[in-house]
View 1 (cartoon, rainbow, N blue to C red):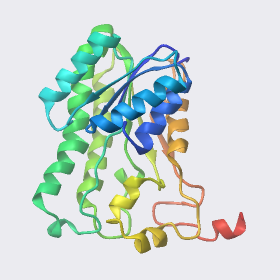
View 2 (cartoon, rainbow, N blue to C red):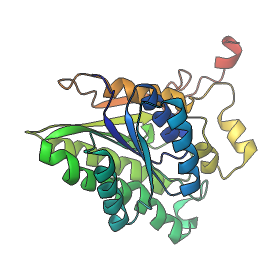
View 3 (cartoon, helix red, strand yellow):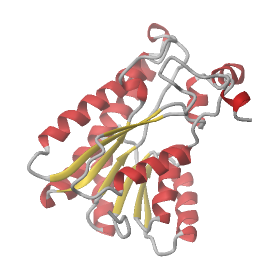
Length: 266
């Protein structure tokens, strides 16, 4: 299915995976609506994408996904400016306080993670469904979850984050059933280890811990996830890749990493 001319809303679009998805979709001729909290970063990326792909329309909305009122207003403004939203990519996510265990987290961190990772995803989905997709009975929702949504890694910390990812999986499965008798697809993309600022945040900017985690193999890059997302979205309307795990080849399972990978593939 061609993505040219499709209107795509991406949350968490100001950096990392979200930005990479935006750039890849712009290259496919899609029109983009970028959501993130930082107005400055959104302005910079919007200008860059307009230069990169002048045929694509690119707009942005600075929005805190934890506020439904803000999300609803931003979605309404986007539809008024660009037209109905064909594709929603729920990419925004937070992992705060790592590697602290749950009982050592600040309660404010727990609230913020739940507010963004669960409420934010649901708020955006609710607003887009009602504004654009359900009236037309068509569209695609792609949720960026994680391989950790199905199985908890063998190291302490991130209980809230992993709970959030499991909730996203359950929500996606239930929503897919609810949207029977429409042409609205609900897809899930599960990244493994990705070399992004996000993963450095998850180890508290501890370079030694980060280097140890990545030792001996090459993690994914944001562009790998972007290509996978586009592959899922380009399938014909009769095909749904309901869930896709995308991991480094050296990540043999959630627990097992081939740390001889770099040595063998130098």
